[in-house]
Structure formats: C-alpha cells, structure tokens
Length: 272
Image 1: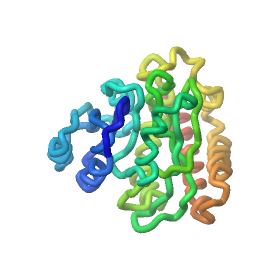
Image 2 (image 1 turned 90 degrees about the vertical axis):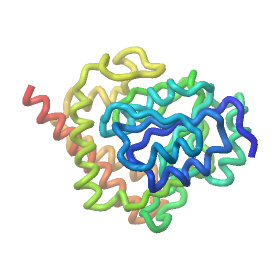
Image 3 (image 1 turned 90 degrees about the horizontal axis):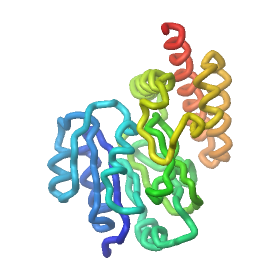
C-alpha cells in the first residue's frame, strides 16, 4: 500500500510491548510520520520495537493518563490530517483501504469509526461504541482532560468503518474497575478543579469553551449521583442495546465511574 500524503499518526503509550509490534505493522505503510510518546520512562521493549520500525519515540513525564500527552503528540506531527490510535488498536482492512479517500474529501473535517467492544478473547458488540480518531489538525478543538472527546470546528462524519480494539483483558469487570478505573477517578477528580489555564489546549481559548454540563458538574459536585445516572443513561442510549446485557453492564460502569469522580471532586473541594 502506498503512503497516504498529508496523513500523520500519533500514539501515546505506556509499556506496550505486547501490542506495539502488531499495531505498527498495521499502520507503517500508511504514513511516513508516526509519532509515539511514552508516558514516563519506558521499562519494557516498546522503545526497541518503535526503533525497529523507524518511527519517532519520545519519553515524557509520567502523568498516568494518555490524555495528558495527546496535544503534545499532535503538535509534533507535521501533516494536516492526524489519526489518533492506541497500541491495542488496529485499522480494519476496509478502513485502511478508505483512508486516502477520507483525508481527501473536502466535505468533512473529522471522522468517527465503529470501535467494537472486545473482552480479551472475543468481540462482544460489533456496532458499538464509536470513537472519533481521524481529524484535520487545523479544525480540532481539544483540552487535555481525562476522557475528553475530540471536537471539531468543521463537520464530523460517522462512518461504518471499523477501528479494531484488542485489549488483552476485559475492561468491564469489577477487577478492572477496582484496580484501574478507581485510579483514573482520583486523577480526574484532581484535574476537574484545576484552573483552566493549567490545561493544554488546541482550538480552545477560554473557559466558555468547556461544555455547560462540565462547568455545572465542576461547580456542583455534590450532585454526583445525578451525574452518574445521566452518564449511565447517555451511554445506554448511544449503545441502543446493540450489545445486549454487555451494553447495560458497560454503561452502568461508566455511570458508576463518573459518580466516583465527582464524589472525589466533592471531597477535594471540602478539603480546600
């Protein structure tokens, strides 16, 4: 496959030797500008794998969440179109074949792909959820806040193309929630009450660019149970029961996670 002009690919990883080789194999022929930022010192073979493929690899300060380095990774790309992926993601055959047409379509400025749920062994939901992963850099609006969606000042097109996600574990289990999600919640809670000027931003200029919903949650975390219910409802509706009970389970976990975040926000505000 020929390299796609005007396309860069950016990854933020943390010790991903189990996935990185397969990931780079799936994208190395798509772009000659692939940027990998590592969240903290690398202690596995990720650097060696990246160097084997001749891609850019830089170690950053350890932050504990990939969003903290997203903007830096994007800023280091040299092309107008950027594909954001993780080490455990792979563009499908159809997505690879359509990438050239996507980045050369003047009607759209960003694209959303199907991101099937996978539990480490099999696909559990083929049509849900979705993920924005490809966009024009000049149209991007983003704040390096945990789980913040990429937004665009242009038109985002929802495609039926698939961006595969192959984690080697089930992210929607009690064990994952206890060991992984709970750590995220504490980090996100601390960042929620930070001053706006402390965040890195692209295409965002002042506090008014935060959503009103976010500003409300930030100012009134005492209503955290309502926030959790609302996020549960949003996730469930977006899934449309396409994944059956698994959609219900994952939506419930997102609701519980957001309730936990704003419980910690409330505690942090009381301490201050």
